[in-house]
Image (tube, rainbow, N blue to C red; front, side):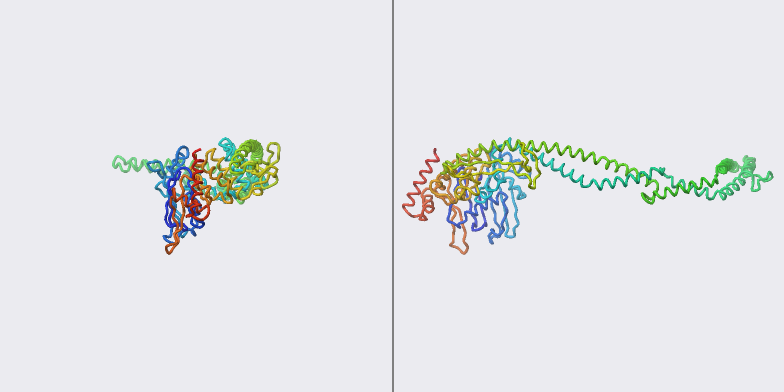
Length: 585
C-alpha cells in the first residue's frame, strides 16, 4: 500500500501531503480544487508521462514523493528488482519513491535512495498500483483491451499458454521471412553460381600450379638465350678445367691451385703461416673442381629445343589469361578458385536450405495453429466465467436485470495478418492468437446484445468497469487501486451500490477514490478534502483529513452545496451511519 503521498509545485497544489491508510481512501473537493492533480501526481510517481505545463513557475519544479509498503509476492518481486538496480528498501521494508519534473520538461526519478530511470517507476507501478479513470473506460471499449482483460482474468495457466503461442509465432514468422527473402534472391544466387562455375571450369582446364608462372618465366629466359648461356658456360668451364684454349700445355685452374698448394706446403716448416694458406688453397681447389663438374652438368642439360620454347610461350599465355580475370598472379588464381568452390558449395546448398526452411515453416505453422486453437478454447472457457462473475457484480450495482456476454470470435481472414486454419476455420493469426473478443451488454430482458460502446450509457459503463475491477480483485492484481471519478453519470441507489462495492474491494486492497458522490464518500475509511486557498496573490490548494463533524459538513456540501445546513448535515450523518453499518457486515 501507499503510506503517504507528498506533492509539491504541481498545478494548483503548492505543497501538500496526503496521509493514506489501508482500506478505502476517498478524495473530494469542489470542482477545480485540484483533485485531478492528486491523480496526476500518482501517475508521475509511477512512471507516467510528464507534462511541463502543469509545473508551477515557482519553485520551477514539481516533486512527487511516496512511501510504498508492500507484502508477500509483490514485495519480493519489487524489492528484488530495486536491489538489482542498486537501490535499497528501508529497514522496515518500505520503499521511498520520488519523481521530479522541471518547467523545462526534464524529469528525474529516485527509488530506494538511488537515482533511477523513470522506467523503473513504471515497472514498480505495474506491480503495485492500478489506476482507473474515464480514459480507462474508453480503453475498455477497444477490442484489443477487451481481449487483454479476458486474458488477464483467465489466469496463470492461460498466460503461460499465451506466452508459448507468442514465442512459436515469432519463430514461425522469422522462418517465413527468411524463406521469402531466400526465394527473392534465388535468381541472383543462380546467376552468381553460373559465373563461378564458368570461372572454375576455365581454371580447371588450365590447371595452374603454385609458383608456375615464375618457373616458366625463368625457363623461357633460358630457352630464349640458350646459345649465349652455352658459350658463357663453356668458357668458364675451360678456364677452371682446361685453360682458355683447352690445350694440354695450358694448365687448368685446379692444376695451378695444386701447384701453389704444394709449393707453400714445402715451406710450411719454416713459416707456419704459409701452411695455413696452403690449407685454404686446398679448399679453393676443391670448390673449383665442384664448379667445373656443375658447369659440365649445366652444359649437358641446357636445352635449345624450339618446340619446348613454343610450349612455354603457350603455357604462359594461358596463365596470363587467368591472371587478367581472377588475380595478379597464379597463386592468387588458385586462391580464388578455392574461395569460389566454397561459395559455390554454399550456393548449391541454398536450394536444400530453402526446402528445409519450407518444411520448418510448415511445422511451425501447425504448432502455431494448434496453440492458437488451445488459446481460443481457453478464452471461451474463461469468457463464460468472466461474464457470469461480472453479471453478478452488476446486479449488486443497481443493474439487476443487466447481463454481460463475452463473445470470442474468429478473427476474419484476409487482413494484414497471415492466415491459418485454427480449429477448422481459416482465421487471421497474430501473436495473441486468432480471436477477437467483444464485451456485450444486455441492459434488460428483451434488449438486444450490443457491444459496450453501443449498448452502455456513461453511468452503465462506469458500473461495468467497476464490476470488472471487482472481479479482477478476486483473482489477485496490484494491491493498490485508484479510481478517478469512475462514478461519473451515476446517482441514487446505483451510487450507494458503487460505494458498497468499493468498500468491499477495500477489504483486500488499498483503494483510493476521487469522487463527487456523497454516497460513495460515506463508505471511506479515510476522507481527504482538497480545498482551494485564494487568500494570497496565487491560488493554491491543500489537502486535509476530515472526521466526525467536519466530514458530515463535507458530505452535506456534496449533497446540497450547503455545508452548514442542519438538514444537510443530518442527511449526511444518516448516510455515514448506513455506510458504517454496511462496512461492519
